[in-house]
Length: 373
Image (cartoon, rainbow, N blue to C red):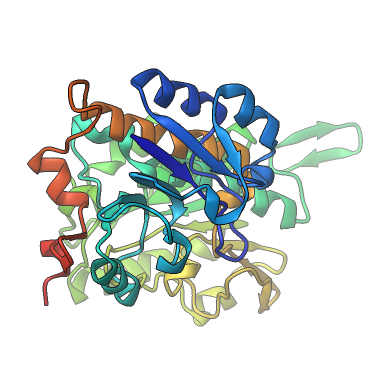
């Protein structure tokens, strides 16, 4: 069983899908590992570290030659897989709803595409969930980046010259990223509040010491939405939430938006009119900017100033913490493949529950039911 890791080709991508730690673990399972030269440079992992762990470090397409499994952060183009075995697995993030042509190309080339974004949110798959591990870091980075842009301190400071008031931070969307954003802002000393369409998140918000801000007059979602994500709400709820947010957001210094709906553009949470009510010097971080944005006027990797408010957001937030993001992503991939490793066969054999959920292509066809039609 030969496992290959290529250097990421996507613009701005600094992460890598394997680390020396997981190289050793795969070799312990009986696999051989090949890593393309320079694959770990963006994550501060030199080629020597991979070699010392037991991997072959090879130039260019030599790394993928004869590979049974190719691991990636972002799925490579089919051309980069030349030399891999027929029917080779490629486990990576594919963004399947937006990259239909890439999925079709994988099917046509005969590769088995395994989309890590489609990992089911069930207990036994938690350690394999790349969206959660990367979102956790993204929530942290959103607060740190906002603090850097904000022209004032986060915590209250008592000084001989007077008191510096604590910043007010509002987190919209309390999933994995939102919870980490709340925790990080609290650690920095801000006064934190948060909201979500899922009523069950009230307790989570309060457990982190933040103030929950919820629509009470219109029913939201009880418990979790589909697959642990929020779903789209009724027009009545959206209107009530917009009114509540408008009154609350005007008092905030920092706003972090995190709302995403799989397979659809990010929901609009903050309008230009709402931005206009905020104090000059305030900062909004749009974690959903790459999926269309929660904030009107936000642009990936640009600082947009509207009404004196800075609006920021990265097209790839996790890559700004490449070393930690790579370590977690690599462990997710190892946990995934090792959980199904058949010692007699010397390779992983996927079950139906998880295998069918993540498999996009097989036998020359697109087979995932979520992509049907």
